Length: 439
Image (cartoon, rainbow, N blue to C red):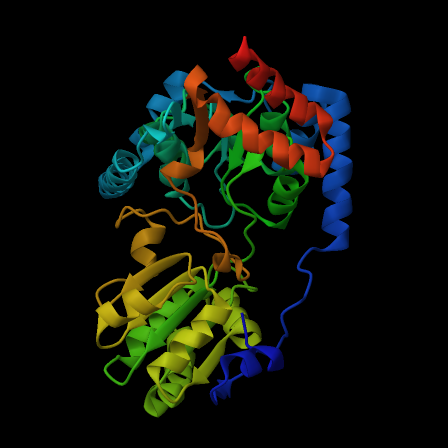
């Protein structure tokens, strides 16, 4: 997430690079070894079915049982192992995420209207029938993932939502991930991770029903599996490493900006973080503050590597130039800590999710506390798409019906166009209805 020379020309105004990344962005983020491994695993599971899934689960997940299904009783008591304050926080996140998704769903409407006399067209919003949600639980289990995938699918009206999460304790899933899945409304949860989990959901090996859609974050292997399975199933987004950009002017506090950049950098050593500012003071102070905070940060080996290799600071002459920089970078998460927030809200257009003002931060949404979805496009994908929402689980279906009296208005032009295209079957399909008018 850095500016190339071509980007600079496109922006058209001088932008000073106050900190450049140590590692240049790759044009192709796909590791050939990962691609080959995932391809082989999908072929093996397609041919070998559940036996192959279980072999991979034992070899890669450390699974020791015989049944991947987490029983209803275990799922229901998962929260008993958790501290009361954590349970309360998870309950709040699940509720707020459902609430915001419900607001979105209420504004998505079926409709029917007359396009021309005798021709009525309409739209129906129909939920996907089967969704598979992947809930990662590696070094840092991302507990709110279930809210954004399982919970939002439920609000959309998806009748069957299964979840898969890798074993992490004694061959069983993390209890906090299980509790998050439970309160989000998962119909079933399976103790399996990685490529084998996505393949098992896509091929219908877990509950006997192939998923129509696979959603959820994961590592490079999970992302590649989603890429290769796309078409056989729908997906949410093809996401790369988590990324954040902060817009700040001279009113911003350097320590706050630094903390927000590091909060996303700790997702992984390849997670980019970028500051774009009109303040020369911040361009100097924020990098120093980041080094200061890294000295006391438990995740410094990860966040420090991400900042060193992929972090950037850009100094721009005015806010319009800053906005043009963001048009190009199209970051996953974009914070604005600057004056005139309404101007920024109206002007900015390429981002996954926007966080306005010093009292809003990406961390709130990451944990489900604001209610918006954190499954978002990365690597400039926000130029052409938004993130996962309740609409992502709904199919926008159209229909039409016509009266006999409307035949001439439709069939006549259809014959004309079809004759020009030399598609005689199309022409005759319309002409037979014209002929029927004369009978």
